[in-house]
Figure (spheres, rainbow, N blue to C red):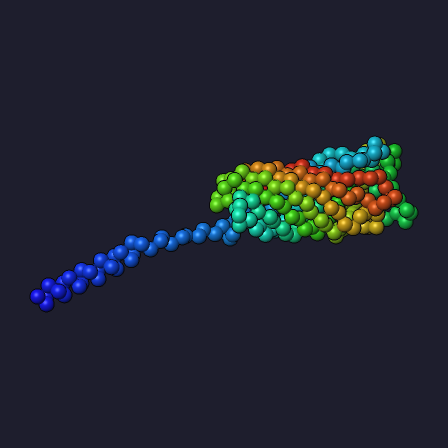
Length: 243
């Protein structure tokens, strides 16, 4: 009798424990994508043009830019396909000219773009501007868990402060095109006085995986007010992203 009673008590206890386990709600598994790799590093290269350039300024060749940014990407909690990204980096533009001399050292009120086709001139000549920039983007990623296999779109803006502006000429020639000192002869002139120290631009990107096409348009003028033409640079190029 005692053995039977003990067995009944043991079975009843096991049944209560089993019932408690069966009524417990399953634990929720939270998957966080806040630490996922998502375009933290942007490397951009492509064409740079000048909107508003008068006919008297003779740009030539493949003017180009090279930018590199490191950005923090913060997904929206309610919509992880959307995120906001912000960061810092360096942006540089190289604009090439033909039969032109830009007198950045000029002491006058305006920046001269001189046509020197009939005088001594450099075979290769460019103007380089370099900025420290802070970009921000509103991003969409079709598959946020696998950003390297996703369609991506971003719109944004960037603000920059000029670090340096200089001209570089290589291989000085006379009016008939004869080299005077050889193609190793290089002259650099650096001066920021005529250029806006701050630039503001709008940006856009669209692509798949680590590759995307980008474009930008500078809202602020390249040159300070009343120092030259109202030039606004724009870019079109390829972005490689990762990390």
